[in-house]
Each structure stands twice: as C-alpha cells, then as structure tokens.
Length: 156
Length: 156
Image (cartoon, rainbow over all chains, first blue to last red; front, side):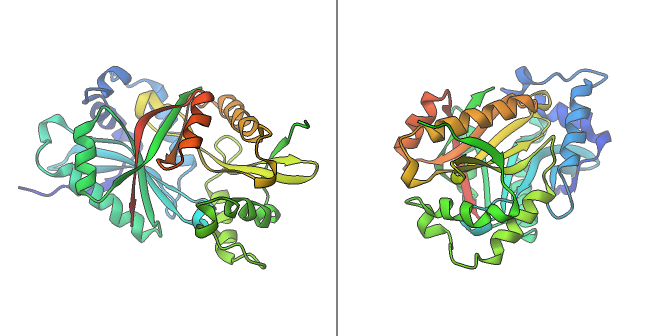
C-alpha cells in the first residue's frame, strides 16, 4: 500500500475538492458539483485565504496518491482567550474518495493534521460530527477523540 | 431592567474579559486571572486580531451595562467550502457575570451575535458545550439551537 502525500490546496484544486465533498451520503445532496464549478466555491476559497496565514492557517489539507487528490479536510487554527489563550485546531469537511476507502487514508490525514497543528502550537483539536454518523464516531474515538461535548447548531 | 449595549473588545478590555472567563465553575480552574494579567492572554488577543477583519471577525463581543462589562463571547466567522461555501459563525467562551445572571443578558448577547452574523452573511451558527452543562443546553435550545452533532475533542 502506498502512503499519500499531503499539501495545502490551491485555487485550481477546487473542482477536485468539491467532487470529494459531494462524494458522500450527506454531501451529495448539499453540494453543487457542476462544470464549470459554481462561483460560490471560488468566493468561499478566497474568503478562507483572507483569514489564513502561515502561522494560523484556514486551509484545505489534501491527501494525494499517484497525483490524484483522494482525501481532504479543512484545517482552521482558531486563537482565542479561554483556557489561558489556548490555540484550537478545528477540522471540518473530512472526506476520502469512495474509491480509496479502507486504505487508512482518513487516518493518515487526521494524523497529519494533528502533527501540523501541534507544530503550530495548538493544544486541542476539535470538530463536530452529525449524530447519525455512528461509524465516524468510532473512527475518531480510535484516534483519541472523545465525544465530551454537544455540538449545537442553528440555521440563521 | 436596563438592556446592555454591545461592542467588540479592545486590548485594554482583557483583564475584564479574563475575570468573566474565570467567573464560572469550569473557568475558575482553567484561567489564570492575576494582576498583572499573564502575557499569554495578550499574545492570544493579538493572534485573534491577526485572523480577524471587519468582514470576517474573530473577536470578543462584550455586553456592557452602566459602563461595566457584564458578559462576553468569542465570535468567529469561519469561511469554508462545504455546503456550497457556507459561512459559519462560531461562538465560544460565553459568560455572564455571576452578579448579573437571571437578567437575560446571555440571551440578549446570543441574539446580538446572531444578528451580527446574519448581517455578515453567515447562514449557520455553531458551538460546542460540555455535556455536563445541562442547564446550558436548555438555554440554547430555547434560542433555537439543536444538539444535532457530537462535539469531539482531543488534547494535542
């Protein structure tokens, strides 16, 4: 088994990323993966870049295997005051291509995100996952995450 | 009952904010509220500012009553690609001074954060709350939040 390599996304990766976001039971109804890709994704990418820096990224991390983008996650480093100014790393939009599941790519990607976040000074990683995704919870618990919090959401 | 006024925090508000963060069952063991305030809070404030803009703030919102800071919350607007580039508003570190609880200041502060987030284009507000804080869940459910997700955390 070949290990993926990791890099942060650039603007031209957007169609491949949105393809991954849509390649999912919930994602397929939530995304608009058409050619050309709707401009809303490009505007969102530019907004992410505007909040991002090398020290405090808000970027998509990509897993690349044989030149193909096979996995992604959004990594956001969020500085804050609570817990003595603890720097949090937050992940979102975690996906592995349906053709490449069962190859531990998701695990490698989370471990990569953990290593990068530690190197940037984060002391906590967090995310929310829909309660209906039971398999996902077990996956993350194996990687050391604890479902200690309620993830509360409200449409605006 | 007087209504609070709201504004974003500036650097000189930090001692008052940390006093609020520490004025809480969990916060009192997690914060280091001493005089002078530890430099780690000032560094964290500056890091927040470095990720923040008028369009996409990462700032503490303050509730002010008769000149006193009586409530706070961290409001972070997080652009991302998923759900067609949906802009999320995230809150953290929600506190009301123990002397001012029961006056609906928390509710007014959340409603203010919702209004500001909507005006900035966010379509979802989210946060995580410790499962042991049962009262908090009921408070947020009354304000339209749904505990639809697991909030997973991992120390790094």
